[in-house]
Image (cartoon, rainbow, N blue to C red; front, side, top):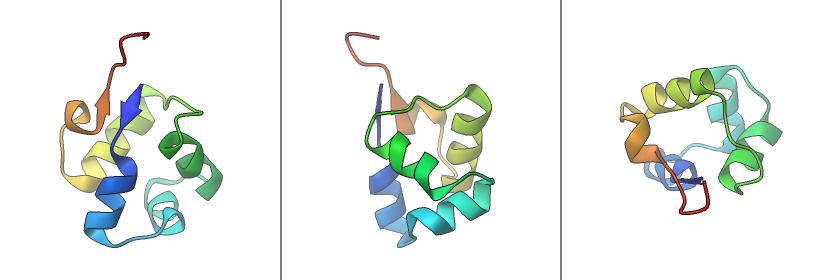
Length: 66
C-alpha cells in the first residue's frame, strides 16, 4: 500500500510526533506507516484522513501487489 502521509505532513509543516499526538499513536507508528512497513487499521487510516481533511483514498492507495 502506498501513502502520502509524509507529503501531507510537509504541507501542514508538522512533525511525526505532532501527528502521532493528534491521532493518539506513537511516533514510531507514523514512521512505520510513512516507510510502508506498517499498513494502518481502517480506524487509524480514517483518523489520519480526518486530521488532514482528505479522503482516505487520496492518502492511501492500493499497490498492484495488494
